[in-house]
Structure formats: structure tokens, C-alpha cells
Image (cartoon, rainbow, N blue to C red; front, side, top):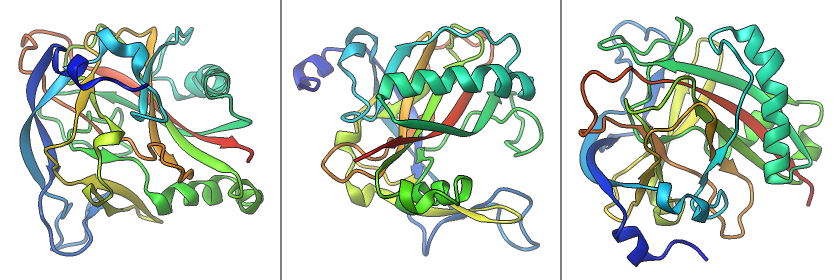
Length: 281
């Protein structure tokens, strides 16, 4: 069974500002590089809302990737330097692949990228210019369209056959240093997300066009976080699921500023790794 409402309402929580999608004409779009002259960087403008974000640690074992869309797990790592891309690919990728495959009882796992984030006060979030800034808008990394396209992009010769089975895109998120108190990650319970809350939005690169979901505000959304995460903990977060049998398919999430965090805590440093997860039907 899932979480009981009475248990949730009794959990500690913080009230914080989350940036949802403001109403916008047409399909929102964001450039992942400097936009053409006269065009804005993004038409996906923020609409901030104050929402309660519940401390999920007391009920961490109750969360399910297929129900809420996320799980907290213990996952120690031997990586010494997450800022070294070669070490991450050589050491972290195979360990993460085995961990995801065993945890999700998958037939196959293919890791296709990772992002390192380090908050720098006042710095812009620029792709390809070192560590990224924490993402402070409510979003989902993939959509119905882009989730399937990831298979075609990374495994083109096998895509048709693989897409006959169940496919997931999973984000493995962890701190590089901890405990994390600065801009922690908040996850929305997928059971509280209505289909109309998710707005397909273009992400434009120099050589291709991707698609993510922006998220409209819904007062029924229920948010959780895991305070003081350490580097031997990780979150599995669902970004896409081809299954249409009632389980959660998309997991909205965002970094947020915890108003109870002291000003002198170290800035958040984290890594997220994205993987295609295959299950034969």
C-alpha cells in the first residue's frame, strides 16, 4: 500500500517557493545556447508558488518508483573525483549500471549521459561551460515523445525491437559532498500529478531539438525531499516509462531553496546520471 494521508500530514515539512510554468501562448521553448538575435532565451517563464515540502525520511521505505516515481536508496561509491569525466565514465558508469539493473530487475541498462552540478551564487546556468547550476524550475527530463526518441538516438540499430518492450528513463541522483542542505532536490508524488499538468516544451540545441515537460501548478501536488543527504545515498527518479498500466510514468522534480537552511552552509554539489532501462514483455 502507498502512504496514508494521515501519516503524510503528520510529517515535518518546510514551506518553500517552487517555480512552476506561467501561462504562455504556444509551445514553450528554451535555447540551450545563445538564442538568435531578438529572441528570448526561453519562453517558459516561472510562476512561483509557496508549497509545503514534506520530509520523507521517516517514511522513506514506503516510496516506490512505480507509485510515487522516486526512491531513496543507500548506494556507496568508490569514485574519487566526480569532476573527472573519464573517471566517472570508467568507474561510476559500470557500477551505476549494475546497481540500477539489480534494483529494478531490468534485463538491460544503458547509461547515456550525466550532469555534474555545483551551485555558484549569481552564476548563470550555461551548458558546456563546466558544472551546471541546480535546476530551479519544476520539470520532467523526458516526455512521451522524447523518452522513446532516446532509444532511437542511442541505440538506433536495435530501437524498433527494444521499443516493443517496456522502456524507462531513470535518473540516478546523488550528492558529491554532503550532507546536502543547500538547494536540495524536491520530488512530486506522481500519483498527485494530472495529465494536463505536464506541458511539452522544446529544448533547442545547435544540432537537434529535444523535449521536456514543464509543469503547471496544481494545488493537489504533494512534494517530498530527503534532508541532509550524504554521498553514500542516492535517489532513483523516473523520467519516462512506456508502460500505460496505471503506474507513475513521469516524476516532476526541482531544486529548491530551503528557508530554514543557514546562510553559511556549503553550496550543493551533485551528479545525476541518466539511463535507459529495458524490460522484456
